[in-house]
Image (cartoon, rainbow, N blue to C red; front, side, top):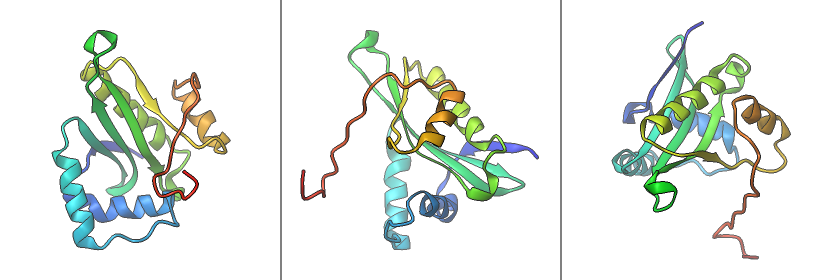
Length: 151
């Protein structure tokens, strides 16, 4: 079956939200008008791309890419990758691999010097997948959740 990768558009919002619900099932459901407003902000953000993967005209995966300007590395930008998700029924068919390859191709075309992603430390299977896609665990990642009462 052919995997198609393309940029997401606002008409894909329902499919994107369904994928994100698989990624973060505990998240509250966004009201449609609010989701549309956020989508328009994403679409207008320079360097931001949300890519979609389709199999037989069904959206089965996504990756969110942000190219960020940088004053180091000779002024070369870098890409942050977030929200990598493939629907459960389409996993292990090459969808995630194609999405990450497309993200790397965008980064290369934009002159980025690196593509960076974070993954929770307890996701060993995802880490093995990322390494199979050419990513290396070279640094410690840190986060601080703003709404965490202990922060």
